[in-house]
Amino acid sequence: MTDRRNRIGWTPPLRRRGRSDWATQTPAWQEARPTLIADALKRACLRPSGNWFVVGASRDVRAGGPPRGRTVGGVEVVLWRSDAGELHAGPGACPHLGAPLRDSRVACGTLVCHWHGLALDGGSFAGWAPYPVHDDGVLVWVRLDAVGGEEPLERPVVPQRPVAGSGVDAVFIAVGRCEPQDVVANRLDPWHGSWFHPYSFVDLTVARPPRGEEDDSFVVDVSFRVMSRLVVPVRAEFTAPEPRTVLMRITEGEGATSVVETHATPLTAEADEQPRTAVVEAVVAASDRRGFALARSVAPALRPLMRRTAGRLWRDDLAYAERRWALRSTGRFPG
Image (cartoon, rainbow, N blue to C red; front, side):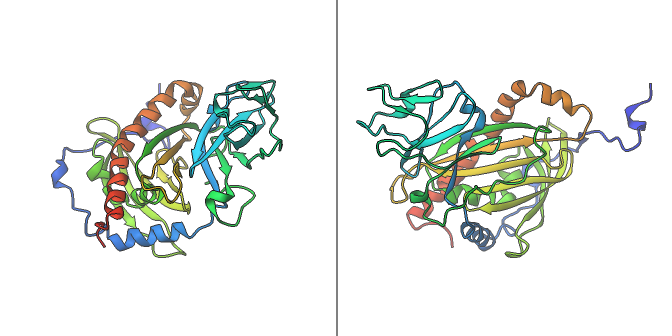
């Protein structure tokens, strides 16, 4: 049998790197200029969102399943699907006596309040009016014009992903005591990767920082650590297509076109003194390797592992975001 290494164009997915000590890395603090990160954040905040907010994973709202309740900007939202899979969303309080509709039931595609049986089919009724909702195949978005305060858009700004059906996706959700901008600022600081997350990233360098509105991406060379000395080197781009989203796309190397979308959804109202923000992170992994078809076939088994990996990173990154908010809210944030 011909050795795979002799096949034209075949390369092993993993690389072996030499031993190195965390403290011997080249310090990144001089490159990670606060003004550069702040300017990138400012540009992101000026982009339109059309008042769309990510509220969770598409597969979590199932046809025939129970309703799902979310809170966005202090507003209760309920979501459910009809028997045909059509997605509905609207205020989370029953218009009759205010029952929490997230605790109600879906019967034949209709949301039926568990207090007195008031039925909602997704259309306006008794002062209850639906919210625009969008399912992009991975995530569910809801449009709340009163919360966003912008000019509405018909559809959310959904980042470009691998071709539908070609990847394996997983969605991780965590909540922190901070504002969306603190989550976005964390993601617009790629320099912290191999310092703050040495268990996941090594050899990280920012090949090109943003140069302004016309060239607004961070280009990063980094190796994902698989085992102690086995890594997967890639080149990736970080961009912010709208105020509450940061996209990481692998542009070169193993898994090119794969993306990690980080969405920051405010749970509390803007004036709340104790803000809480949900991080909804969608990972869509793709590969042109022949064996990746096997990964797609066992996607249900892979998703918990993908969520666990994201959870480990966000345990640290939420601490970063919460610290940033604590300093900002007391006027102690540098700069």
